[in-house]
Image (cartoon, rainbow over all chains, first blue to last red; front, side):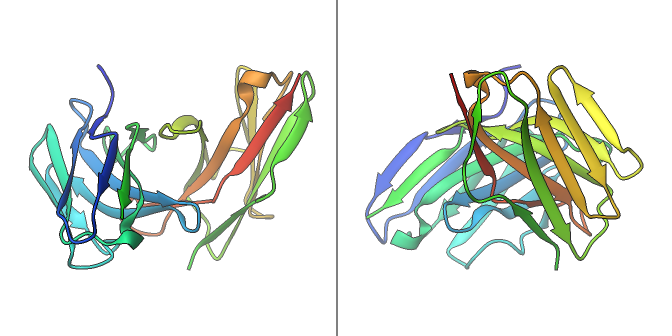
Length: 114
Length: 112
């Protein structure tokens, strides 16, 4: 398996634009997580899915953020409209099942909002 | 709420020596604790998981201890190498829904 695949790796956009980040989890993994990492706040969980169903989105900072998982092999994180304070690295991670603790992370999407 | 503390300052170690990183947590008794490695521009990579009923776990040159009384985990790299230079993150399972609570990470620098 190629691991968790994220795109784009880098995104530079202007304030007010819509940003869509994409993730393909490892096949067969039941859980998918979206994290945000900044120097100031470290790794923060935004939302996670179990079997494509959003379970906890309490980490989503504002209504500008939304996430979907239409099927087991694809998820998106959308920011609309984007703001400079959204600049961060966004990671997607997947986990096999509830009995395993290990998370497999993608390489991240570095977002810069000007 | 749960809180995790890792040394915020970089740790400089001479090649060949043992590097020891500390992870302290408060206000909770986690079911397990994990250590991850993160290289610049990359995602975290899982290294070890230790459960609350385990005192120590080893994997090659890595050793993790878990003291639930002190609420502390130590992460050791023996015979350290420059390739071990990275940021090491500690994470504990939170109190609900399988969430992980993450430390800020400690940057380890192994000097040749």
